[in-house]
View 1 (cartoon, rainbow, N blue to C red):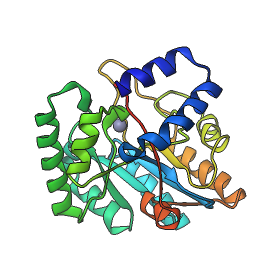
View 2 (cartoon, rainbow, N blue to C red):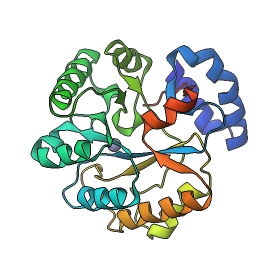
View 3 (tube, rainbow, N blue to C red):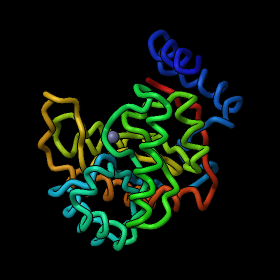
Length: 248
Ligand SMILES: [Zn+2]
């Protein structure tokens, strides 16, 4: 029902009407809301990186974040992390927050709930054995039904969606990708980016320098007096802004 409602809204309403509709629905559905940002005035912006760790991009990204003294959240795929446990350990040791993306980049909405639960439990247990407690979960593709949301909550995980995104799965100049974030971004937002990148078979991966994109985003945030950090840092201030977020 909720998925249907959001599909109808996506297809038939303009952006302004969609925002209005969402503004009316979100307070009603807050008990089943996903974390979309932080409440209240904030100068913080959470940086999130999905689909890693990646053997080429992640080390360079970690170097950049260390140089700038910035903490971020990495939503990792545990099958990829298992191939490179040293990278996963480095992410944790350098003080970043580690969230669960899943074991592989599959849609939870396209499998039986029992399978989704079993895989979330196993992936989380493995991750926690290496890096400590995991609080946040972001399902691949943002695919979520009311059932998979409830499952994640019953497992004690908090579901995190996102606000501005760089569209960094598409080929483009780093300046263009950074501009897509810096245009709309405001304090309290959660920014979506990728250090790894999982695309459907046969689709080409973009080759632009995504670490340069992050560097430009950090410069742009600093110029606006916005402070980048991890999702946990963002929520420590104002508490979560929740939004009903269901999609196939
Ligand atoms: Zn992903």
